[in-house]
Length: 208
Image: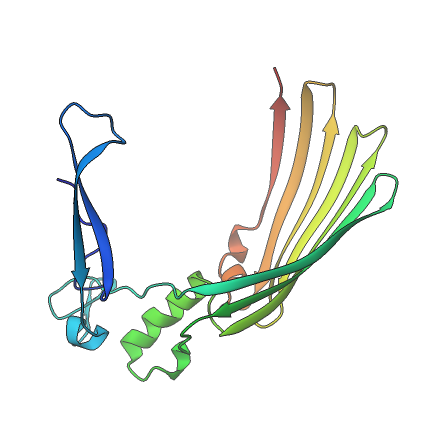
């Protein structure tokens, strides 16, 4: 029997599926399903949080995690060919988080630390975040040379990622591509946290 995907003392008011693999069946076939429903409030279920190693644990010593809150992402945009070989794609982005809790308003320092890290990782530091994306693409030399610039900017959290790319087709089957990925932002933003892994890449594509 497989283990439950989540511990029942961490996630309340949720239903999880528990599968057992039938004998002689393929890996994707299951013959038994059990449903587990857990109820209670976060406080009643987890109790007082304590530090255990590099994690926070609840009253029973189980690692405590905060779930990503549901959100609605709205995208409105346009794509247009400006000239022969040159096109632009422009979008407005809006991300609205349901049941948002400001991690900086949490008084318990341990819970506040976990909530802040969870909000940064899930890009939910604010209830509403506005942003834009822009992509410019230009083809030269009978479409054998292609240059592209892609940019995403979130204004509320002041973070962005920029990716210039250039590709050249040596033949119908061989193509060389070089691109770079630059992240920037504050330490309380997702792109800001990963800015140290900004890097460049080279691809060699061979089609058969």
